[in-house]
Image (cartoon, rainbow, N blue to C red; front, side, top):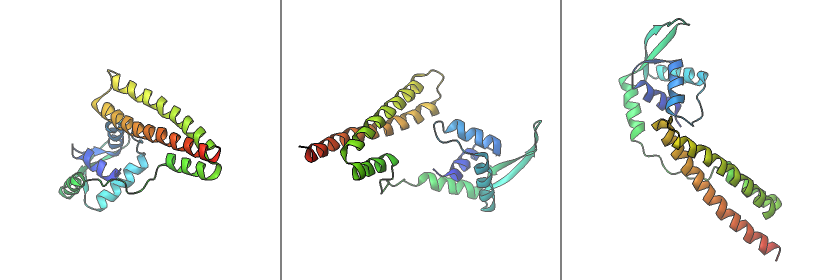
Length: 178
């Protein structure tokens, strides 16, 4: 995920200061890893340096002085370009889940991989139940629901891979131990 582009998108709705950007990010991208305040300010510094945002004023609101930022025309053009780019499907398998299973098979053969896959399936099922409750909670926002859908579909793909791999590991075990 491009933090810079997400911040530009949030600023497209109007000027915000760093604390508001962080809060808005975490609310509008539920279930995503929260962005750190330091990351927000470092990113704003780069966006300002590159002419993609500009300061839009300062306010205090009973606390420390805060600088608001606004997206520039160049920033809007950069955001529009990013939104128009099609994301290529990942060319490489970079999942830690995949790596652990592959290494378990290499190091210890089928048994360790099987035990790991069974435990991982349980963890995935638990997470699916949590996400399903988000979708049925009347207090959930549209953002909550689409984030839950995204995570559920990825977990479902992982679970199908786990099931398939458990079958392959069982076949390997039968070959090695007839």
